[in-house]
Structure formats: C-alpha cells, structure tokens
Length: 111
Image 1 (cartoon, rainbow, N blue to C red):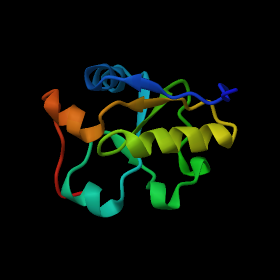
Image 2 (cartoon, rainbow, N blue to C red; image 1 turned 120 degrees about the vertical axis):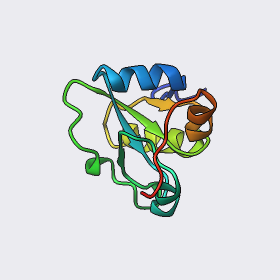
Image 3 (tube, rainbow, N blue to C red; image 1 turned 120 degrees about the horizontal axis):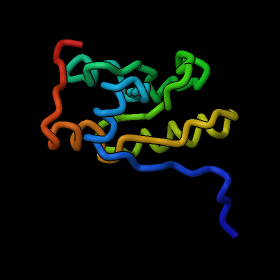
Image 4 (cartoon, rainbow, N blue to C red; image 1 turned 45 degrees about the horizontal axis):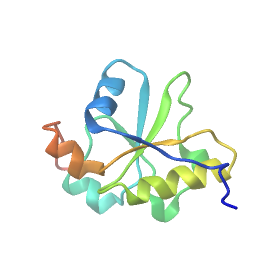
C-alpha cells in the first residue's frame, strides 16, 4: 500500500507566472546559488535544496507556496520535505526554469 499522505501537484509555467502576478503564489527557488547567479526567476525567494530548511521559507500569508528548480525534480523533493515537516506546501513548477523559458517567461541574470 502506497502512502498517499504526501502529494505534489504539478503547475504549468504560465499558471505559476499568472499566480505570482496576481499575488496568489510565492515562488521558492530551491536551486543552488551558483545556478541562480547565472539565471534566476524574477520574483522568487531562494532556499537552496542543499541546505533546505522549510522554516527558512518566509511566511507566505495567504499565498500558496510553489517550489521551483531547473527541471522539476528538486522542487518535488523540496515539497515532500516541507510536507514531512508539517507544512502544507504541495505545489511545484512542472519542468522548472526550462519550462519557464520555453513558455517565453522572463528570467534575470547576474543573481
């Protein structure tokens, strides 16, 4: 029997961008600092997975926390870790920054 307690919901890049724009989502980038220095999401909070502590995520208030990374793998790991710590953070950006760029959404460079 599979544990169905922890789940991660996939969100498309356009949906995440719209949610950030209208104040519904808080994007949490779990990539490493060197990756973010090269290319970053414009409006993300950075909590690298290598030192991941769900308590380091700022209080989202009424916003839904959405995890993001490069391709969507580390963001799932972060979501599951946050859920294991008792937080109801169950969404991630499917396809990561690769999908974000493919959707024509902006990134910023230089950290």
